[in-house]
Image (tube, rainbow, N blue to C red; front, top):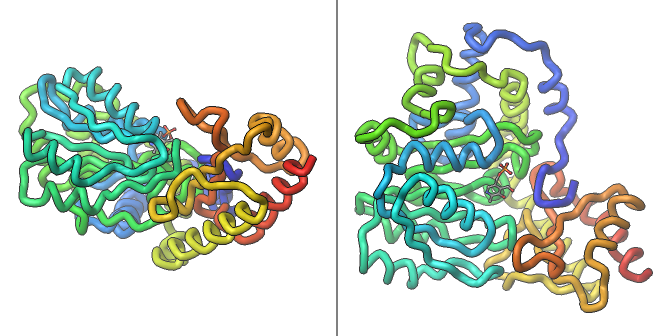
Length: 359
Ligand SMILES: Cc1ncc(COP(=O)(O)O)c(C=O)c1O
């Protein structure tokens, strides 16, 4: 699995997923939930009490953050340089927000000075950005944008679906108020859960809403009663086995150590890029802004983009991703996410590409 997610899942996580199901209100299960919350707080680097895995994939995490924080008429700024920023715009618009956007060329990062100018001209309730733009392989300057928002009332909302577990995510250090992620990328768990975290500022905005959260399933004011406190109240049946899987996946990452996991991603990314360049291939993104876990590679002129992917899948059992939107047909996306980020996988994909491209 060397595409943009899901990534390879370790055997320990498969074993955890297959462990016997117990009740979602069983006291033993509640202790596991509390431990998952503590694991996520370590991974995200936050003391935010409202930290939990929402039921659903990364998009459910996005919806959780947006539906709980946005009320109709709110002024929202969305920074866009790829597909996942565009989805934020779509969602905020559906919720009746006044959405302003700042758009940047796909394959390049958000420019902090342009954000500063926009913020000098207007005050926003929320500023939202994608940390790791999976559609292009660009790392956005999340810490620098956070510094612009420090000491303001603006809520800083960040998509960490692809970044979490593969590069540093420092919620408290970077002033992030609301964050969402997904399990199937650098956490190396199958798709199905979406870690989310809300700072005190974000919780205050949630509690101060004038209107009800417009989505029943993802309403944190109700979900909190299942995830916090001495007595837990049923909201929806938690995906018990998925939570076992996440518990195990997070345990593996924390046992490895965050810095070691980040270094492993970086080293394998560097080896992959060196090998791709030896094959005469070029990267889409300038070196400074590249993501280690998502490598966007330009398709050389005259090469059958889809044909290469099919050959890798059929002949070498390797899945890589295609380009999206304006980059469709122009790039391949090679993932080195979580458990996939290993030297043997780098060697395999390079050897497979060499044979296929030569043909
Ligand atoms: C940056 C980013 N945000 C959001 C999503 C949506 O997550 P999901 O497909 O798990 O719903 C993805 C999925 O690829 C993503 O890469």
